[in-house]
Image (cartoon, rainbow, N blue to C red; front, side):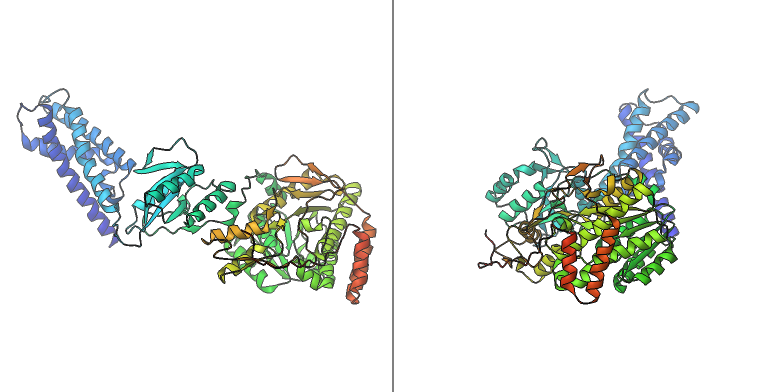
Length: 631
């Protein structure tokens, strides 16, 4: 049935184009020589139609879809017209008849192109013109961006059957486009002039119902300024779909602005070839594979074509989720999901012996500061003892390298979580120093701060609180943290692994991700409220609850005795090594584990304090009223 409809449409095209060509030949004869009269009209009519059908074959003229005619179709029309006019003149001359005028072929080609092109353009415009119902549902929007993204958005909007958006103007990233027009819409100014533009539109009673960001490069401080100015006028800000997501038909769905767009982190050039050399064809194991960092590690590692990927986690549901996802995205990759607790030495040794990993990424840890403070024995056994178990098992099965995922909380730790992770760092540093001198498995440590949206991040908490209507809770007005996206963090972890394996880290040095500038948590809360289209302190209050046990106001990436060193790779720094003897650290971890198993947590913490002398345990700080944040 579909092929019959297609054949019918082609037949209609042939008939209609033939009729137009016949008329065009007669009109061209009259235009070329108005006083000459029309000799042999049937020759003109029949000859015009037949030569077009022949001349249009190379350009697939009869197969054109008029409703979606574009520039390429009009080029085909022009080519068909030129070939047809040349054939017509050739046939007319060969049969012994003189051309009406020497310019007749040119006039004929132009006339034919007009007759064929005009109906196509008119049909396209009538079919794609949106049926704009004059209802309150149609929103007036101001586009932010006047480049390719805005052009694609306007074209998609023109193709909507029932428009829900009406573009009243655009803002360019710079100022040199002001006064020009894009598809009939005026460019009212630059992004930096948003306040002036909105004030002028307000005076004209033409304020937009929303700002729509079409420029993907708009981020950081400029995006924050956009949100502030839009909030001043109580105008929501939305993100346009990517050009690849736009469709000719159907309603355009605007998206909320992503929190990541406010970080303004520059794109780091990564050594993808080096990552492929590191992973391709090797057996890889990831601990904590169900967590935020571990699951993203599994995704990126799977794309690098390892020989096999073992994903290990103590949580069944989280492990099942990432295993299911990898099965859908990389069905040919041999995968081995393993449920195991890194504290269970016998189970870990058996799992590693079965998988025989050549590369191990150790992301398993207890990361929530308050939870580790409330369960200190579990935190110490997992973060310090579990790391020793994993690293020793990896070395025993002949792994080439183990990569430890560490945290900025390990620097001058104030929490048991941070101090336990510092013990893990010390053990890996000591083993790596030993491996560099005597040979054996390399231990690469990578330290970084918070990742947006992770299970340990404040962002999911704020989202839940916003969904309930607030308030948003912040521990302290001056609390600040480093943030980056999980994808970027994991990519840099892989980059650090390449550098550590191919170039080496001096004497157990720790790779530190360049986290940029720290972000105040209260500012993050306000931005999330604005992203929800609400006003901080007015629509949604912010309450300060006081520092929790183990928390400090500022996190650090480097200890005072490990000043940063450049690595020559963007996004990566190196902490000057502070190493200890591997046997001493191993013995201390064993004492901590024994004390925890015996329920003697105070004794375990005492050993921890002796090994990490900079550990200053914080007990928390209450915040007095008022609980509402300052304006």
